[in-house]
Image (cartoon, rainbow, N blue to C red; front, side):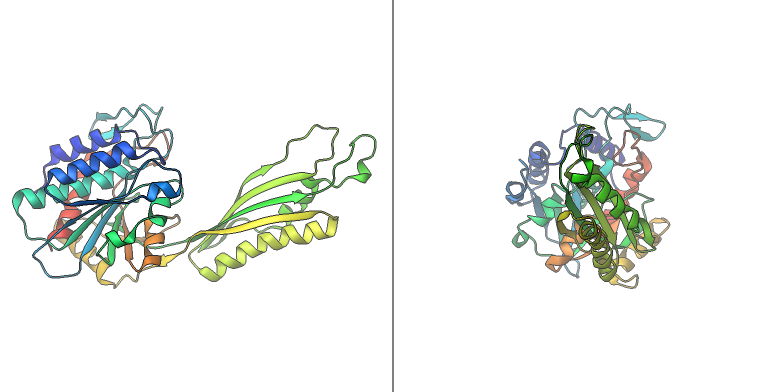
Length: 368
C-alpha cells in the first residue's frame, strides 16, 4: 500500500542533509516543512539549548478515527560522525556509501518509514489510530534530545521507537541503564631519576587498581569497560595524575549500582593503600526499561507481523535509546528494528526491502 519509490527517495534525500548530533537544525526544519505540507500542526521545543545543539525536537499530531490510546511513533534525526557530506550509493537492492562516511540509516531509516506511513494514511484517507509523530535530536550523543524535551507537547503515553538493528519484525523489550565514571588518581610528583622514592606514581596506583577490577562481561545482564586511561608526562617525572573514564551497563538496577561501586572501591582502596588521593564522579546517564512480552504494545507488533508475513521475535537490548528516557516521563516504550546494519561505521548499509517493510509496519500499527 505504501509508495516504495517515495520511501527510497525520501530516505536518500534525508541522509544527504547534514545532521550530526548538535547540528540538526537543517534536518529539523525539513521535517517541520514536510509535516506541515501534509496539513499537520507541528510543535517544536528548545531542547537543543540544553546541550549545545542548534536543533529542536519535532512533534505532530494526526487525529484518527479508530479506538485506542494515542500512540507515539518515534525516530531520531541526528547521526554520529562522520556524517557530513553523505553520498548514498544504491546498488543490488542495498543502500550504502563509499565508506568515507556513515550512511545515516541510524536513524533516518526510521524517520523515512514513519513519514511514508503518515503520507499514505493522509493521501488514501485511511482510518487510523490517534498518532503522534516525534522526531528527536541528540540521541546519538547521549539521548539529550529526549532528556531536554518539552513533554507537554505530547499526548500519548506509549511509544514505538523505530531505532534498532536487525530484521524488521524484531522488538527490543528491555534495555540497560548506564552509569558513566570519571576518576582522577592524584599521586605526588618528583624527579624520576634523582628521587623516585619521594613520588607517588598515579599511573602505578591506577594500574594496581585496574588489576583488581572485574571488567568487560560481568554477567548476562551487566558489562563494564574502561574507555580512557590517560597520563602524559616526561619519563623523568613521576606522574602525579592519571585519569580514567569508564562505563557500566546493566538491565538490573542493583547490579548496575553494585558494579559502579566496585570500580569506585577498587580505586579508593588502592589510593588509600599507596598514599594517593581520588577524585571520582559517578553519573547515571539513563535507566533501564523492561516491557513484558505479553504487553499490548508488544502484541500489536506481533499481530502486525502476522498480517504482513514478517518474522516476529524479541531481543534484550545492550544499548541506550530514547526509550530509556521516555519511560521516566510515564511513556511506555518499545524499541523496533528497522533493518540497519553496521550502524556507526563506514560499512553501514540497509536493504531497500527493509525500508519498505519498516514503512509497512508503521502503517499497519497506525491502521489497526
